[in-house]
Each structure stands twice: as C-alpha cells, then as structure tokens.
Image 1 (cartoon, rainbow, N blue to C red):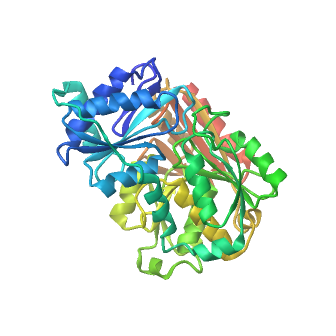
Image 2 (cartoon, rainbow, N blue to C red):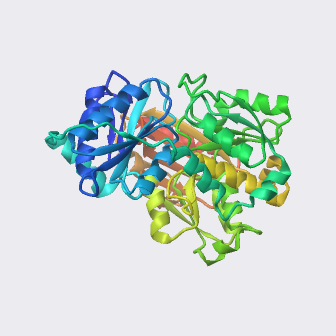
Length: 456
C-alpha cells in the first residue's frame, strides 16, 4: 500500500488522480498483459460506470498493447459479465475497471485469470513481480475488438439455468423495486427481471456513475429503496452495487433484511425441497467466507449440506467451490457464486435464484426470514495501526473457550455467535464483525475487540 493505493494479488485500488493515475494503471496493465500472454495474448476489458472509467480503460488498453496483447472491449458492463466473457473468448485473462462498493472517488483494476476467477496466490504474486521488474512494454497497440454481445450472453446464461423454473416465476407476476445506484446494473437487472415476468419500478437505474448515496448495498444505505417498496406495493426490493456482483434484499414491508439473506435464500433455491433434480448428484457443500452469517449455515444445514469456510475474498471462495465441486457458495455481503454458470459473484444470478426460492415456496420475504433463527450482525472499523498479532493473542486469552480460525485474521466462534477481526483487503483499516442472537450481545463482542485493538 502506498498512500491510499491498495495493492493486492487480485489488483489495485485507490483514490482517482491521487494514488491511482492513468500512468499507474498503464503500468499494472502492462504487467498483467505480460503475465496473460503466457496463456494467450488476448485480454478482455470492461468497466463500471465511474466517471474515471473511460480514461482508465484507455490506459489499460495501451498497457496491454505494450505487453503485446490484443484486447476485447466489452464496454460498460457488470464485473461478472467480464468474467464470463474471458472464458467465452478463451482469453488469457481479463481486467475489470471497478472499485466495486468503494465511494465515488475511488477506482480499481481487478485481474481475472483465464478460468474467469480473480487472481490470487502465485499468479497474482507473479503480476506484482512483473510490476516491480518493469516489463519491457515494447509491443505495438492495435485497436481493441468490440464485443457488444457480452451482456446478452450473460442474461441468456442466467435464464437457461436448470435451477430456475422460469414459467413458475413468470406466473407469480412479482413486483420488484430496483436500486442500481447509477452503476452498471440498471439495464441488465431491469432486463432480467422483466424477462422473468416481473413488473419493475426503479430508482438510480442510469449508468452515469453519479452515485446518489454510499454505493455499498447495506441496510443503512437503502432508505430510498425501502420507501419505494412501500410506496409501490412491491413484493420485494433489490439493490445492487456499482459493478453488479452483490445484491441485497428489502422485504415487502420496506425492511432491509441484511445482505447475508441473499446467499441463504440462494442456497435454499439450489439445495432445498423442490430444487432441480440435477443438484442431487452434486456434493452437498456450501462454501462461504469466515465473515458470513450463521443464517447461511442454518440454510445449509436445513438442506443437508455441510459448510466450508474460507478467507474473505471472492477468489478464495470461488477456488474452494471449484476444488470441492460445491453446487453453490458465496460471501455474506450479498455475493452469490453459482458455478453452474460461472465461479464468480453474480447479482443477476442471485436475483433469479431469490425469485425461484420465493416462487417455489409461495412465501413473502418477511415470512421466509421468520422461518429460521434471527441474528444481529454488528460491524466496525478501526484505523490500521495496531499490532494485529498482539491483538489476536489478546483476544485468544480473553476468550479461551472459543473455537479459533486463523485462515484470515482471527475468527472466534461459539455455537450461536462469533467475532472476526481482520485487516481489510480494500481499505487501510481493520474490520471487526460480530454476530449474535441479539444486537447487544454482538456489540459487546465488537467493543471488546475494539478495546484490545486500541491497547495494542
């Protein structure tokens, strides 16, 4: 990390024109292109709607050309559309230009491997090594090939999923309120919902990148969507983040139920009673990260599936899903990974699976939530200044009875609650996340974690 520039094996992220500049973007794109060339000298490029996107796309294309790669430009599209386009074209990799849920002043590059999964481990480290070495960059840039059909292929792939009974969904005539935060998701989400027979009422569906609120689809940011649900009499509300890989739900009463329910409902759609018969032959495993809610574990248990937890980060979850042959997984931030289409978080897939679950059971969202135990999640951030190893030791001494997992920071677990303390992958902070049957109990865990961070 340099200033606000966050450098990781999956890409870079920073404040536009402060730490993330076109020259830095070009340098990293050249390094990635040099790496991708070892697989195939062809790279897919796409972006979300942020104002800095077009000039960063130019820098990416120039960097890839300097590395001797040809480019396929899919334009302003969801990140999962870029991932799908990589495998469709048999490309050596892909670059999604998006800062996902970060505020409007940020942007980022996400590096995608030839398998459509974000880089991690050895591959990501190799790209960073190439940045440090300074790849020769003596290639000749050629105009990119434009691929105008990427979104339509994405939609067609979702609609063809065997887990979906499209006619049953159409027969329900769902009324859906949609908030796309003026990111890349307005057109694709509206099109999908309408093809599933939904009447759509929307806000912030424009793709101009002028985010009207904090872009992360967490409950405190969804007040306008909640009001739209109540005003329009919608069956539910859906909110996506700017690059359309996360989806959150608002129930029919206008209550934002929390992003973890997105994955919990999707698990029930894929593995629950009445699910497509083809899932019966698949190993019944649900993969999620260490910060994912117990509502997902409860859903998996109800469906006779075991839960495997990974470090936070889409690549970790996606690779575990692939290695285990799991039928579904994801992250508790509203990111659903359904490998029947591809091994990446995908909000259109999540939206379709949620409607499948609701159409099959006939319940309203609030009723579906009430059918299982409820938990409260409390999240906090503290500046990254503490000695984390010292913090972890202090937490283990404070809670010797808790089960510990140190794959990613420290997770302390009990039967009905947990606390996870870890450094952020996307911001210069330490994240504290706790879950318990009540908000007061979760807050107590957070405060103890905060106290020990301050003391270290």
